[in-house]
Length: 314
Ligand SMILES: Nc1ncnc2c1ncn2[C@@H]1O[C@H](COP(=O)(O)OP(=O)(O)O)[C@@H](O)[C@H]1O
Ligand SMILES: [Mg+2]
Image (tube, rainbow, N blue to C red; front, side, top):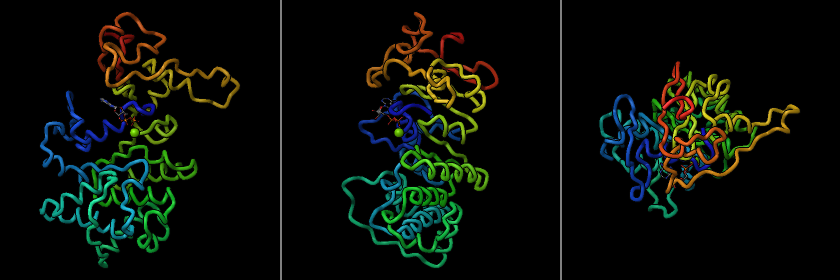
């Protein structure tokens, strides 16, 4: 969770090596997944994590679904990739995998031959669509992405991502482009799927309400850094970082006290030339001298509640 521009998508894309490089480079740190540092992997080895281990869905499914193919043939492609992988073929067509997990480029490649929906593929695609509560899967398979509503497209994306049977689904603002009612439905679906399909979800959101409804654990980012990391209950009932406190006091409660809604003064620092010390110091009501001289470290202050702030020790 973090406001727009704080680096959530950049972090998520770097996890599976999808940042365009150049110009992007991971200069420091590690991204440990099941004991493996993904940052250290060669692009070829990282590719084998994409989809089967970690799948990703984006805010606007229209940028990831291919506009010229019917939903059915795109789902067939996703299923075939999984199958060729589990058959040890290391995914016959690596480009096809890239396509699945990358927003469609403006300059599109020559159109590939369309995947035919064999009866088996159709059956599995229908099941995947049913899993995401699409009532008329038969018809949806025959539709082009633009013929579906935003909520339906997002469900199709989730179904495609899940048909890779990933262990981790990274969902980058999956409901931000949807209206409030549809957003609630998609969130409910994702929550249910966590228990149904044995997949963990890393949900990226700028919306505190969304985080509080869906998450077990919340990581708060500010200007490219993680500032707090805690169980959802602890985070919302006992926020520690001044930024998290600030964010929470910006939520209207619907009571008379709303006249005291406190916006956080100032603006987010430049990430290309970040400040030397704590990146929040300039906006922080509790800033001390030390905050402007060196960056605080993320530390555990008890029962897994982590915070990066000098108020809780050096
Ligand atoms: N770790 C980083 N180092 C340098 N620049 C960054 C970093 N994270 C984000 N940025 C810059 O900030 C911009 C916004 O980041 P983004 O990940 O899109 O934010 P969000 O998804 O939270 O809205 C990026 O386009 C990039 O220029
Ligand atoms: Mg983003």
